[in-house]
Amino acid sequence: MSYAARVFRVLIASPSDVEEEREIAVRTIQEWNDLNSAERQLVLLPLRWETHSAPEFGRHPQEILNRQIVDHADLLVGVFWTKIGSPTGTADSGTLEEIERVASNGKPVMLYFSQIKQHPDNIDIEQLGKLREFKKKTFPKALVEKYSTQIEFRDKLSKHLEIQLRTLISEDAQSGHGAPNYSPVTDIQFEFAEPETGAKLGTQIGLKSTAILISRMDEVADYIRSVDSKLETEGGTYLFIGSRDNRDYYRDAIKYFVGQSLFRPVRFWLRNSGGVGARDVYVDIRVNSKSAGLRVVSSNSAELQRPSKDRSAFVANVWSNREDDQVQIEQVGPTWSVVFELRALQPQREISTMPVIFMAMEETGTVDVEARIFADTLAEPTRRKLEIDWVVERSKRDANQLLIESGIEPPTIAELEGDAVE
Image 1: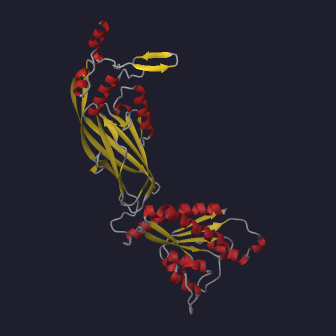
Image 2: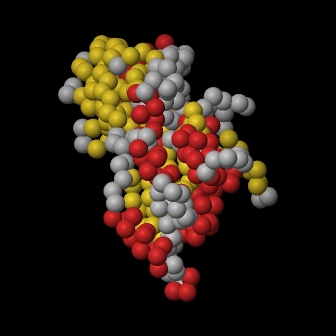
């Protein structure tokens, strides 16, 4: 599928003794494009005289290259080893003229000097002397690096391309050439979302819940199957009454219904409003409240699962759900930590986190939500603050009556004891 993208042209300038580094630079740029272009809607185009110039008669070769390639560069990568290149008449070498021309246009220049050993017979003393003089000079916006292996050169270039790209995007936007209404950086917004639809709700929401106080819990009976379970064996039939029963089924059901009244779903909304995509987005959320009873659980929490009359089936279902959990939740003192990750967040794209998490409060109060958002294109984490105004109502309910109203009619302890007497 096609996509719109901004193109930044990277000129590779060097003498003839670093041909392998020139190829490495091209491959490094192409690898960056393979990994980033579609997601970040950016393309780096390597410029070399071998691929981007055309023959022309009547002018100095360097003048032709300047007009066809050099003056269109947005960034220059210069690589040197023992040579400085051939003079052009206006500069000591074509490479130096290209560097000076790009730097004078206010474009970034990154210079790399090889420290790889060279056989003395292959060294031109005059060229080496001019190179040493050149090293002493300072070029505006030049990043000077040394490398001892070609692998080190590749790794440094890959890192520096990412750094310089942010400068290019910023300057491009300030000059008016960037995409309209795009911030020249990664700009991640963080708000609440509607739990079912994922639509954004803003940075402040209100929630209501009911804290149910249960009475006569000691009068809730154990659950026992009305039909005996039988196990056939080679030696005969053995009778098992309630062998796999969840004896706490009625009590677990009450806890489940109380939880449904107390917990409320909370979902978050993120948007990258900037012009630079972000990868490896890590969201670290801290939840606090000065009021009592704050709890945060995932949608797969055991206390939110409808209980089963078969204990083994219920336990298996809970653990199966936990294996699919995408959110890490833990309590550290009075603070709840909620962590989740996204592979990427493209420019001008939004996403609502899944799965939904659940929060509960036992008292009316304010819940403070503070998020720190990390990404590969953020020099430091983005911080966002949200707030929940929570109103808690209180209610008293009889344990068995709550079960009956919920469609469950358990026997009372008195009834079970009466059956036992009979």
